[in-house]
Length: 108
Image 1 (cartoon, helix red, strand yellow):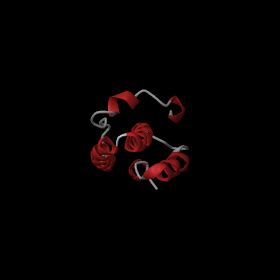
Image 2: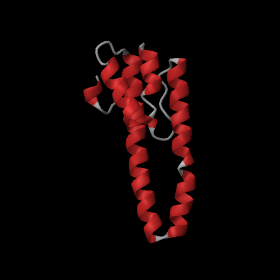
Image 3: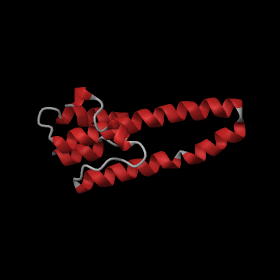
């Protein structure tokens, strides 16, 4: 597979990220490294958002339900990331993308 394909796969769950990371790490270009950082950041944010939503649902059910509807934002960010990777552009994800452009130095 080429780096563009690995960039797209990296957005599809943590398993897709692992496949893209280990499958493309030998000949990774800037595009793949960029999208690996963005997708890992999205995975971390969605994981933390899920934990916060579950805690709030236990404490205040109405607030938890509102936040679970807001989880659609995570899905929208995922689709935007896949579109950016498919088009071959290094564009940060809205809202959270700038935070992860220079993080995760182990990626490259």
